[in-house]
Amino acid sequence: MDEFYVCRQCIKVEKVINYLERWQSRDNKEICSICGKNLGINICNNDELLQDIVDAIRFHYSYNQYGMQLISLKRVVGAGLFAPMFLVEENEIFRNKLDSNTAYEFMVVLLKKTDLGDVSIFTSSENNGVQSIYKLFLDSHATKPLKNAESLVINNIKNDLNSKNYYEIEEKYVLFFREILDFLPKVNIYNKVFYRAREGGNKEQILLGEVEKEISFPYIDKEVLAPPPCLASAGRFNREGCSFLYVASKETTAIAEIKSYVGQICTVAEILCKDESVYLDFREETLKKEENRCEIIKLNIMYSFKNLFSIPVQERKDYHITQFIADIFRKIGIGGIIYDSVQTDGYNVMSFNSSRYECVKGSEKMVLLKKVTYETEELRDERKNYIGCKFKKEEANRKYELKQESNVNANYDFDIFEFLEMTKPFHTPIQDEET
Ligand SMILES: [Zn+2]
Image 1: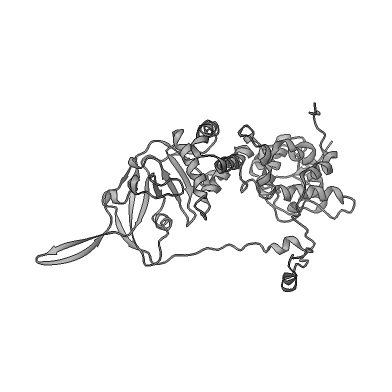
Image 2: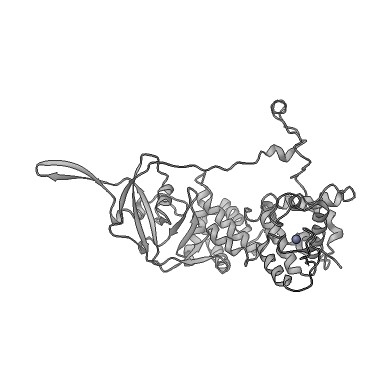
């Protein structure tokens, strides 16, 4: 019988903690394989729990990270040098780093008991009909964890829009989006107050007896709302000549979204939502809550929508995809889309029903933008991933180093067929499907 003991203090995966809490109250406790305390539960007989761990691995790590490690693990098992690197380092699965032997044993259990070594859950770009959306899209997952990887749905849309007019494929995606609508997170925002900003304000002459004087004051009422369709320029979700309303959760978010510069005067106003339609909610905060109850492939679909809606748009052509998706949501009766702001904290609401929003009377005001703050994130020096390799240009080899920092050896490209060959002894196919 397989044995691998884990206690609730050692694991980070929320779903699994819940299971363990239930079991741990009983008496059958053993030495935890990770921390050595007397609170361990043998997890080998709970396939569902093991699958939850695999899902968490796929959510946080790319296929190259966990798959590649399995090959190296198999190859040099005698040498005992290699173990799944992501588990030996700080990781998202366990609270502590595992030693190589424990990490190895753990992966062997997963390979035997879960779909970790199953290739049929993947599809690649050559065979990705719409029917197979409930599969993992290997081309993207190979290098990205599922929380960042593109789903097959988005990939299909991109491919279709490369070769066809949007109206030729609309019908197909209307049917298809109806199917996935069930599990997309929805929210009602009727009677909620948001903010909208617009550059500038009004200037009018007033008469002081005989003297004229120009005064400034905010844009008023409808002047703050969405522009009329004839004046609307294309945006993330709307085509040119099509006017959707964009509002934000905070005043500062609304101002940041119009990308004002320091010294700019803007009008800001409160906007009341009188739309009773259902909105799709792709905020990070909302999706985090879904992580515990949603299947991994559906989670990947949600996150890939979220990622698509929140990347800063570099090229105009990127709008085509979001505009197309928005159109399909509109056609199936959705009121709009809620997504995190790329510019600052807070979120945005894009509504198809701009006429169902009102400017709160008297809330209009003018503000001067005094300061814009920036936030940065340090990026990994990728030389560390390729220690021992050489630059293509001789000059680069003279200027920069690719030297060994530790004995960490990571991120080679690999071949899925090789992966399967190497891991074959671990997973016996249920039946031979060759006919
Ligand atoms: Zn433990």
